[in-house]
Image 1 (cartoon, helix red, strand yellow):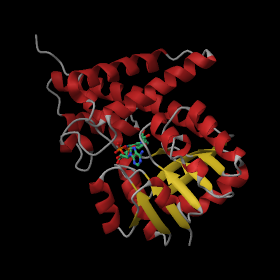
Image 2 (cartoon, protein in one colour):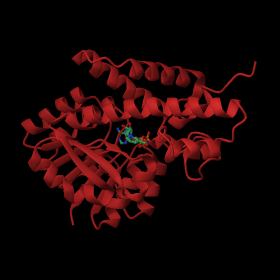
Image 3 (cartoon, rainbow, N blue to C red):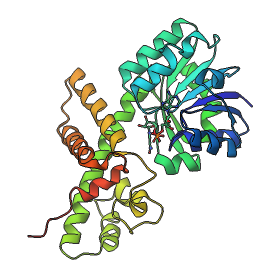
Image 4 (cartoon, rainbow, N blue to C red):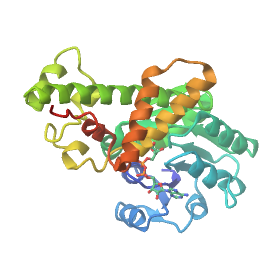
Length: 297
Ligand code: NAD
């Protein structure tokens, strides 16, 4: 059993912390939201009134925060954990942030003798609840091996992509592909619906044909085709349009820095930003289905 400080209990972090408790670990949590803390307490976590308090006594500190600024703030800010954590603590940041920030935070912590890995996840809220996430780690082999003890109760697959920051690069490659598949699947379904096809029948046909992909088979964007996905619950409870938009921005930054050509990624980035500007930022990213709805002539 390990002592874990867990910071950030949103759609993902809440169920991840609950699975750590189920795995037999002693987990102390912090979030800015009182409702998130209450839910975590009901799942068996001890609650703290600050990130510092959650990290006191912890062998492992895990963060699951929205974006770069939140991660930098928690570790390097005025009350930053960098000034508090004892040497040899292992920090695991599971947020999706830029590789550059992961390297900056990780290097600063390592200079104080604190271990750090970036470990963004794939698998969505369903995977977080079921404890079947994929962890995509960047950092030393020793640190990733040490992290296994606390990652295993939350995940099914644990990969090491390379050194510090490599987990974040692999993660944004995956999410850029995911967004392209989501937009393509939405277009295909809307085209079929516009021609009178039943979305469930069309989904089954494409699922058993060469168009099969995760957004069609597991996370269908058309309401009513599947029960337990955000599209059948008013696009609530999944992965926000604003977070996908953020990840696609990170992918574009990485593409610019390396000279990689990502025309489809650039297009989906603009589609998601536009969809957010139209007021859909807090919906699940599968709601892009409604952006490509046919306008009957
Ligand atoms: P979320 O917005 O639901 O949760 C973020 C939580 O962080 C909130 O509860 C918020 O109150 C808390 N928070 C923000 N600043 C804080 C601070 N300074 N101290 C303590 N708590 C703070 O987001 P999410 O969907 O859980 O996603 C978290 C991260 O995981 C993001 O980087 C996202 O891109 C990534 N991710 C999400 C999904 C998904 O399906 N939702 C899948 C894979 C990866």
